[in-house]
Length: 333
Image (cartoon, rainbow, N blue to C red; front, side):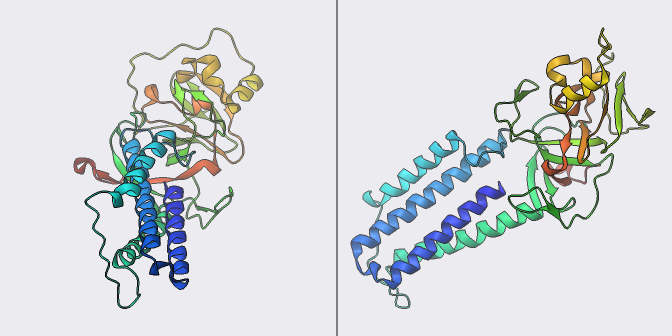
């Protein structure tokens, strides 16, 4: 979302720059040009409003995809609003005031457009910076983290806690803490393949929230639903939720550890072994710079057991505060 707001802010900035340029060239002395520029502003505003409205609707219904800047549905919805804005001056509702502003010598409707463009520019750029570096709103789309986080929880994600990613790179700076076992993390699904399907759907570009179980270099194994770290049971997990009364059995045939490791790192363990990996998994070794994550709702979670490790570059931050619904408000643990 932050990338979308940043681009919208830049577009607004370009509009402001061109408005000043045309003002210096006395283009707004022409009523015909002024009406044309006003139509362009209305079309731009319509596109922005339609685009952001469709993004909000998609987020509300759970279609949260961050890998693509704009989907076809969002584009068509935004274009509908842009067309309405473009043709608005042709309707009987458009009554442009021909008076000019005494200070700027601009038509008053152009002056109003410029003020709104300035508001867009500042607001969207500031919002994108805040969302990129500090806080981002997030909605829990599934029950994989019950009962720590449940479907419909709205929360703020602390994006600074594990460092701020330098734009267009995988490098982070100013990290406040290292990722530890037991941390809840929000991350982008760890794949660059837009055609990859996991756990019954296309997960590419979606944001996930899970709990860190395994750290880089650790040996991870699950026996009858219990995680083992370097051959030692993980211990008390007050957050873990097991909905099924029975554990699924081990696979009939023993898989070579190196083969299993390779399949797991290539995100194929779920495809090859289906639900057998739910309660009896591994052993594997977590690669350097990666983490093994699981949902607290252990029997209903699509996680590292099925699609492999999460590289640190995909991790965005950690849930900070649940703000909706009010009855659930608080700090998740």
